[in-house]
Image (cartoon, rainbow, N blue to C red):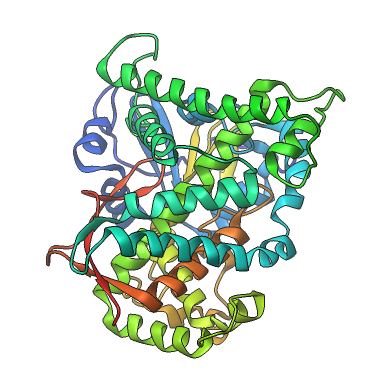
Length: 458
């Protein structure tokens, strides 16, 4: 195994709470949430610590050198193991969960869809989709109405990924979004760190999950069958590429393999960007000075009659920094998990074979060693001069290494365009004075769901 170590017993395990017999810290995690427990452990034990939860050994790493060791330096020793099994019940063996040669083949096949030039060439169409969304809101939402931000943004981000990448036309996007939500809440949301009841047992949560999976399958397979019935398709979108691709044995992909990749892309491509927009407008509502600076740039760059294209996007530098700072303080992808294959040493501690390593963006993105005043929302910290010398593994909203999110550039462009065009026409005001909490599920959601008051700009 490349980079693995012959470890001796004098390499200590990471420190951590002992917890209760058998269940460890399960009750604490269930009662308080995984992030507060991790924050408390980091303050007490340091940047690498061990949590025992219901028989699982969770080695939490909140140090850039440790993240680099796992995701790049000794990456062959860390796999996406059973910790992803709940997600596999939804996405199957798609790009996010598949391992080994199959992953390398599929990544190479899909990479052309996410080339930077292709994404920049779609900026104009992306802007049109945002403008059409705003026109729809103008007909339905009055000035001062309260809206659920995630419900408002999800149809837009799903439309972007389905049209610009996947090449599918969804007749009922809200139905698909609801199915994703129910599947995630009842499978992944009930806890990757808990012992889950098998899906075959008809608990209320399992019934909802199975119904959601049936809806997902029906809608996605309908798109696949429609494309296959239409005959020859070019490989210029995801569905066309998958229908013409070959597996490692030179055989066409199965219907199930095509389904898994579509579900993976539709899920990952809409949820994280929608949540980025949710947290962006939550932060802008709490920081009017940032909103003013953002609008000044947008009004200067997007003057009347100028098309939104790659050149205009390049000038929206402050807007981009706002997105980067949102992804620091409230990264939707709040954790990266791997299973250790053979004993390893990370930051001076032994990681035993079979342990689950959790590298948490949330802890590292708020680490005072790498971020001055980490709780302060400050887009200027991403100016080139402010970023110089910062460890690159202190910031990884799209993960790092070879398995870094394939759509990271598209996600940044999409969020930048959407925020620019939306702030030109509206703002969202906080409904109350209480701070917004979060719920660390498969992604970082506001808790409770975030409602804000929409104000049209005069």
